[in-house]
Length: 307
Image 1: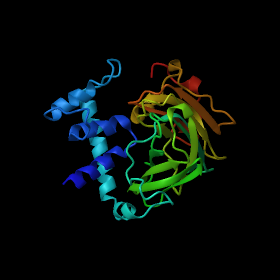
Image 2 (image 1 turned 135 degrees about the horizontal axis):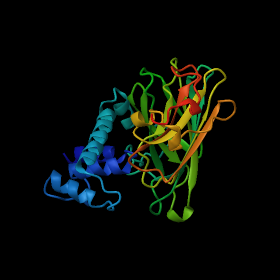
Image 3 (image 1 turned 90 degrees about the vertical axis):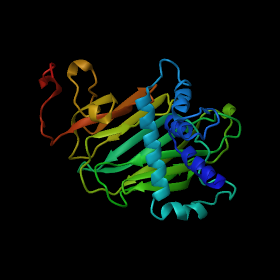
Image 4 (image 1 turned 45 degrees about the horizontal axis):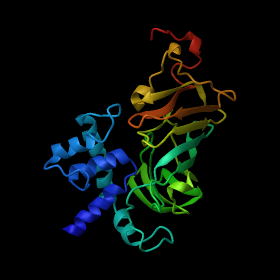
């Protein structure tokens, strides 16, 4: 029984989102800081760790737990991948390194450049991620998750390390989603400051992308997210805007008076937006109208400010 509990704890602690990871650990009674006699007391103890400005309600906490449960269940049930990776290292790593890392180095800065084909189909995203060490000799592992919602079939997403890291483990949590654990090339301590590494997400898609890209629920430690998009020759945005909210909300075009429209550069083929001090609980992204969309040819000035 103790071995099963230990493995479950390791699974949960491999999740990259600190708030949601801790929410499930507290709910299960697997975090020594939260020892309430029942689920309700442990939830209250966890919520009390947030400042008044950051405080969230019980419904938010339950959503965090549900998210973590779903990811952990996918890891356990992920066809033969989970059982195979238990005994087979993805790279030449030390046999003493745990399969499910205890924690993930926190990210301070994240930059992405997304490339689309001439037909508006995603080709790749190049990421640069900068992390810090919360304690001396920190575990050199970083957990990330990627999902593509426009298509759902096997083989859509491939992850490659580009510099400063290697892929330690990968779990396909669905045909269109993948969790990747990166191992950086150095065990960090706080005095080392920022460490940057890179990786790319490659897409094998056949359908034009939904006109939105976003970062979901950034970590508390993230202080900058830099998003850039490069479009192909024939399919590109007529108009674009940034959002900080839910993805569904973000896809609703704002009125010009809100000041959220982005300048579309390079004859419509380049967009960028820097999000400073992202809000941990919200999606941050860019949405647009394709040049062959239902309102093609309409300029921002033509829009009715009253909505």
